[in-house]
Image (cartoon, rainbow, N blue to C red; front, side, top):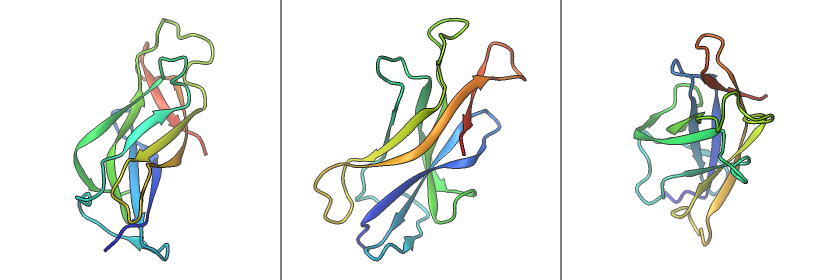
Length: 143
């Protein structure tokens, strides 16, 4: 089946380790959801870019999944990796570090008729101090 669209979403839950799942769902030519139990081999793996990367460093880090699995949070989606807080450039972090960071996910190739990378907005994340672990930071999804 030819996949025409990809939709990237961030789970509405934070994992036990403080990271946020990156979920990607696919749709057919009519926009109907496609369901997969593994990543379609013809589609390039996703990459992530963060709105605070320039001048940088970004407050977020994307870690691709060692094994892509179906999401338990988002129907018909696959968990492609996690987004977590990066190491702040100083302690305390500079003013504004980690606040309202836009997340963009790109699939370089493999969708039906795709001639250029497809980038989708996956939402906004804020990095805040972790009240359970002094000196540590966790990402928080913005609704």
